[in-house]
Length: 463
Image (cartoon, rainbow, N blue to C red; front, top):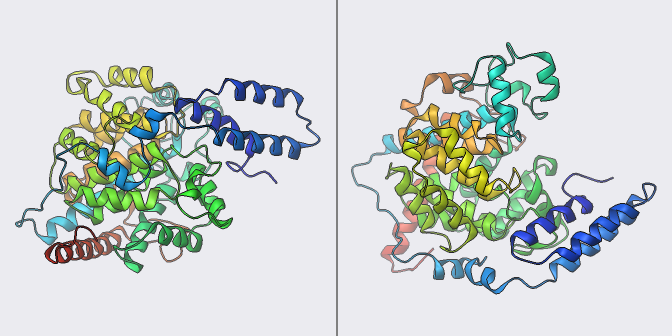
């Protein structure tokens, strides 16, 4: 049986693209793949699988370009050595009380869930498809959850809702936040801090995944890393072995809890994200998680989005492909440019990336945050109308604005349909209440802060 994302033929196709983006000459491998496809025997698919696996091994033996190795390391110490000088952790204002932190934390959870739910039915679709769907029932520009009401039947047959709970995510069907991997990761990371604490390691993350996650609830890089863990590969090898999705979006969508737990300390949030993400990703995939974890941590104190972006950039290599893409977005006069024109520019420069890649989705999310200017609805709607990984981008943008604005300021139109409840296949989390998750998050954040302060007082460099 061939399982999606574990299929070696599929993996080889994406690995060729990945190696090419890393600056490796893959001309020979492209030719080999075409020949293998032409000669493939449909009666013997296993032979094609073995040939593809062998070619992946050959690809993995090719040396990494010197500039890439220098500018985009994977290990935390090397990342810190080349990150921009002067980037420092924020220090929380003493007059910010627990009630305000709780409101911001709950705002993050609710903002993330609603943004994810908004993008869930149409995940993967190009922006032109999304616009065609919305214009068919006079819902363009987007200002509410998607609805099938008024959409032509032939259009819905052409562009069906996402198979995994997309129908349940329509405005007329929402009962709560349906299960989604974007929120499963947030809850799992809460569990890690609750059960292991701030000293958790990448190996702790790996063991927790094996105990708590149903493997088919994982996708792309995460599913391959899970298989690698089962085969005895520990982090970081679990991320690197025959994993062509290693620079895709997984780090970004797992970043939020680390930011919530390290409020006001983007450096520590980025470190937590690195411990997590090096198990499944490399380079750009790692940086996406560190970048957004740092932004979310800083959002508890700083509310200017462009300044928040700088806090994120301070934690990652400045000459990386990821940093270059974010700086490209920052150079666009987004505040004074029509949103569709902004998205045109992003698609023109970064549209060659897969719809689940980190770089293009992160760029679109940052642009939506800047254009939204603190308006929750405008921010998540812009992120989703931009296409690509719509539920992930809506979730990340919604999380950051949720922290900035706080739960009390989030529009009821977006929050009330959640009914303070989320579904999950994670043991102990199904039908959790968002209010409870926020209280639990506040507790682990207090523990993280106490640990950090106590070690600083003791003169330790890190904990």
